[in-house]
Length: 314
Ligand code: CP
Ligand code: NVA
Image (cartoon, rainbow, N blue to C red; front, side):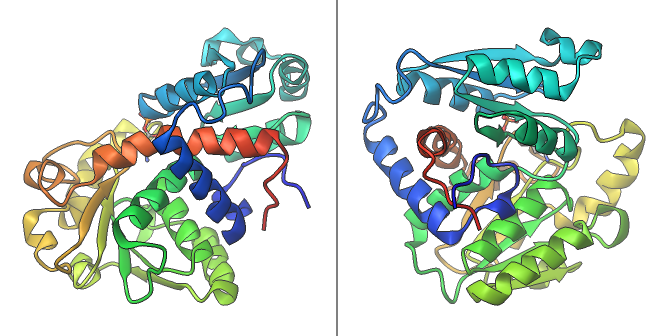
């Protein structure tokens, strides 16, 4: 079967991820390896939330494939003035070869996927961030190789879109993944956890959910974190959230509990002194700049294969 869109991390199979990362690795070595793949074509990039990396990576990826990116801010489209998602998707499909979209509701991205005849790529929603996880996994494999058995990959902090994508991709890749978050309001969505556990049944992955950052960090190969206030989070939550999340901050004390060759990862943007201390993110274990660079290689690979109809889905 052919998968038209990448709407959710859970849509990908292990074979898809292997293919995407192999091509991304080629694009890391030679960005212009497929420099006519999108020649004379355009890719629409529609974002209703800010972005540094995903926008730069997407526009650069399209350029390296020989195409032209068309960036559309939230209020650039008539969608914000009541035009329907269906009509918008129909028009975009008439012009562009793909649509990369960052917005709030996952249901909007799903609807765009249904209504568009061209590939739609989720570039972050409140629930998920699939393209980030492709960059994260190629970075993990560069460090530890493809056989990650015996290794523990730990996400610490807010049970948000990144925690969901982390658990889901770990499940697909057959890894031992952990989400260490507060209980209750800032825990990962139980439906996403159940879905990851379900995927794990067929991949041999171990999905662990805990409220204890110390036991989670012990003997971990990766400590991963994300901002504590995501785009769209209510400001009224800030004080309470900062207090509750404090024990989950990645500090050098926490890093000391990990294995000798462990790495620190962060999707960025980072807030030094909140979710991570400066000595960790700017220290020798940090791979955040390599990870950020792989946003381009992996989005380029994703565009290349989706447009050619080569992603099968799970
Ligand atoms: N990691 C990430 O998605 O960064 P941006 O929000 O800057 O795109
Ligand atoms: N959880 C963050 C991720 C930013 C890349 C947010 O949604 O704002």
